Image (cartoon, rainbow, N blue to C red; front, side):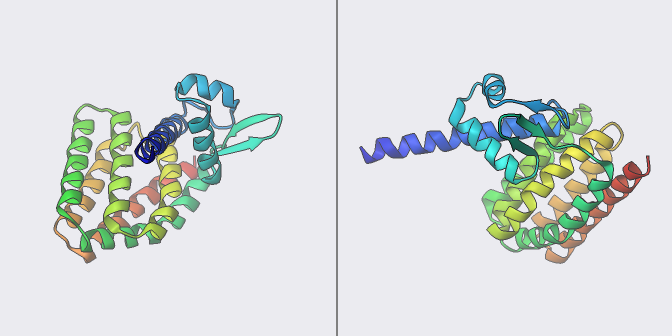
Length: 221
């Protein structure tokens, strides 16, 4: 009985994670447009994952500031203001340095293999001019970085900021910045694989500097 209960709990967690990942992707890629109003029923139908996991995903994304639940009115997708991208990057900068240094320090063989897989996925996305593929690889990199750093507090701070940043990048920069962004991410991965903490921190800061330049340009349009 305990084994069956355990499998049931694990299945529920997987369904919740799938719902979150799918709904987050729809928000990041503007499939759910900024400011749009949707209902839980519509999202359940679109995701085909059941009411409970979708509701849990909605709750998590609401906490992250990407959705707003308005009783009797619906679920509002967070608006997108170019000037906010700068705020996201400034908030993200310090925690990314912590994650990069820690990942280099505590790197395991398993994490190294995952980092290498992510670097290859980014390279392939650039060759195919596949923006959505790059975004998936970027999300995977953030997840590997969080696990490798072994700092749940920093990871929890970084995760929503990373999602917001991807959304801004997709809206304002994805048409022209794919190769440049991928190169900076791969350089960060390389420093982590070399277990060079200082270089990993520098590469993380360099990536944030690049994103901040894009954010400043977007804010001036």
